Image 1 (cartoon, one colour):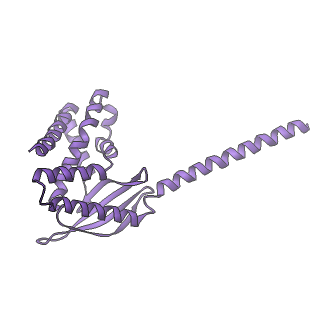
Image 2 (cartoon, rainbow, N blue to C red):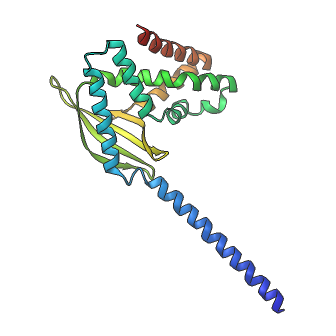
Image 3 (cartoon, rainbow, N blue to C red):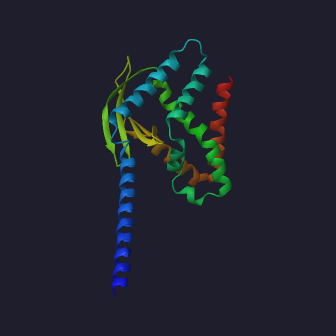
Amino acid sequence: MKQNHSSSLIHWQVLVASLVLIIGLFSLQASAQETAAADPEGAKDFIAQLSDDAVKVWADPTKTEAERQAAFRQLLHEGFDVDFISKLVLGRYMRTASDAQLQEYQKLFPDFIVNSFAGRIGDYGNEKLVVDGTTEAGPRDIFVRSKIVRPGGEPLSADWRLRKKDDKFQIVDIKVEGISMAITQRDEFSSLIQREGFDRLLETLRKGANAASASEAG
């Protein structure tokens, strides 16, 4: 009986130790997920630095227009979580596309989306961006609220949704005047696939990627 009691005690000790370890791992995971939302100053600094770098690119007199566009796209490549956005905008079609279609999509998407975002916000790249503050966006993300100040017009609101990846901030969406660029892109992709099929989407991505290459070459 004493041996059975001792064996049971050891069993419970191992079980309790395992539970403590599991709880500890969950706590560490939760802490990691909260890091982005818990670092508002770092998030604001990230967007402010990105804005400063963009202004320098557009104002550089030594670069041609094509070189400025290429440099601006490179900034976006570095600042955006392109892999996450690619999955977000494709939505449910991630599960219905063939392996070959997905491989080509993932190859073409980075140049397409960066070129698309560059075209949408590039017009404001040489304007002044003023960071207003931050708002938590769920347990992982944070919104950096800002205004694009234009000398000849009303300020535009631009909200940058950030997430931390490998301990670095990355942009996963932008809302300009309350309109999500990622969601808008997802709606466009979904509509195109429904009307004309996935291969038509790939053709559109190829044209977008080729346009970016032609612009840089020009």
